[in-house]
Amino acid sequence: MLLDFGKLGSWKWILIAICTLTALFLLLPIVFIIALSFGSSRWLAFPPPGWTLRWYEELFADPRWIQSALTSAKIAIIVTILSVALGLLASFALVRGRFRGRAVLRAFFLTPMVLPVVILAVALYAGFLRLGINGTLTGFVIAHLIVALPFSIINISAALETFDPAIEDAAVLCGASPWEARYRVTLPAISHGLFSAAIFSFLISWDEVVLAIFMASPTLQTLPVRVWTTLRQDLTPVIAAVSTLFVVLTIVLMVATALIRKGTSK
Amino acid sequence: MTTPYLHIDGIRKVYGEVVATDHVELTIGESEFLTFLGPSGSGKSTTLYILAGFQDPTAGDIRLRGQSILRIPSHKRQIGMVFQRYTLFPHLSVGENVAFPLRVRRMGRAEIEEKVRNALALVRLSGFEDRMPSAMSGGQQQRVALARALVYDPPVLLMDEPLSALDKKLREEIQLEIRRIHQETGVTILYVTHDQDEALRLSDRIAVFNRGRIEQVGTGAELYAGPATRFVADFIGDSAFLAGRLATVSGNRASLRFPDGTVATDVPVHGGGTVDQEAELMLRPERIELTREPGPEGTTLPVTVQDITFLGNNTTVVLRTGWQQELSARLSFGHPLVGGIGRGDNLHIRWQPDVAQAFATP
Image (tube, rainbow over all chains, first blue to last red):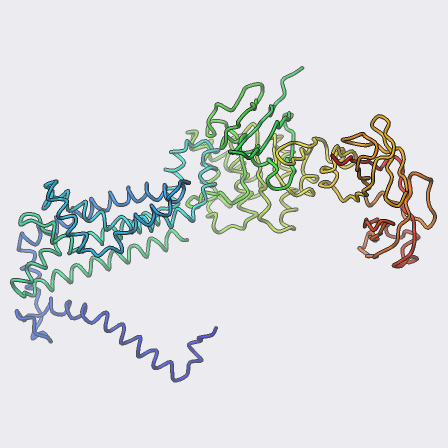
């Protein structure tokens, strides 16, 4: 190998130093927040003068936080289901279809990924005003679905592309109707793609803040919006506690994805 | 006349401007092993896909025991098929793969278990029930695919170049397995290949496809000894073609004159019949005799030795005719000329009158 780690000599230490600094740069803010959430200082002093679970108690005692978390979860779950379902249908068309403009359509489906979110948010806000769905669950779901769908399509298309349609043909000759073949053979075979699509869609909706700020109403606020508005009024360690829980949930989901991927690739 | 078991009746398939198959006409007997042999794009796979129901023919019919199957959707045709690519269901174990057609048919658990066990025993993979397809070799995967296609006793088994992804040694091993399975089960097999050795090794009869049409149907020996067209002569076995013109024609026999003036007399001629038409004389290398003296007139030709290659059981001698056309002859091990001839020697070839054939150039 050209770049053999063992043959780098003193460069090795420089490489290690760069890697360590990068890791610290990425991880320190998170470690910092987690430490603060358990710190006893009301003013977020660091290092914390003492340790407490008080902010977590305050968090769970406040129905507004719980309400926002439930709203976030509800929206994220609906978005996940719709995103995977639509992503699956779109992927079938994009991967298996033989029609003019397929490449253009694929690029079109992926544009929400490259479009600045704030522009999308303004456009949706203006559009939803006419429809009267700003500040409603429907508005939220549509907005998040738009940014989640490209990730669904990418993951499901990738899985479908590596799946040989001849396998589906084989299932049909074995006596399964075309729909039964797709349901019993194709879907299980691309399940890792469906699962990745679901995790991505959920996480995108769960921690999305720009669109959510535009869509939110006083009675309908997602957790990131609540964090944002609370932060503007009052710098409380409860926010550190919320953030910590966020991080934990994300890590749990990522680990679950990795484990399931490992399981299916065996 | 009794109804044929399987009758492919004038199948024609057109894609836009391209004619994939044209008037494919064939009857297949019960328990027969018939191979579609031809180069890629010759229509053999298209015909198989129409049988499987993946494509509809533009015209024609396919009847199984006298009943047309074209209106029956693929999944109700009960046909078995082994594909060129590996098509085991990747998320199911070997046992579950073989059980799949039976589960779809809602068969009882005990019956499924017994049939799966028998099918795996048939392909000599007993005990592999719990293996995942990804943990098996290509040859094993194709044997599981064969078990899966046979487990529901299909009236016809289609095989679309199932061994083309395997290496030569493994291919020959599985060819023997397929023959044994055909003999044990008596299933009717339609097999597609572009490999003439494979076709000769496996089949009861071979249908040679070319440009969407069947050129000839017959046993391997029939095709080798009496090819009906130049294409069949060229595709099955090695052959030498010597270009000349028809000198005389009477009925379906003719004499050919070569550019150096030599004449081959009284050979059967296919596909033509006017004097001075271009034609080729076909000779099989192992039927060409090489001698120092010319043979009887009309069955002999002067040649020059170009190259000599020792190949173990035979010695191949590359020869050149007076008009610079190359052909080869095979001398069996121990032939008196081997060792006694060298490059540049002037010799003669001769042939028995009944082994030569001529094909008129259309």
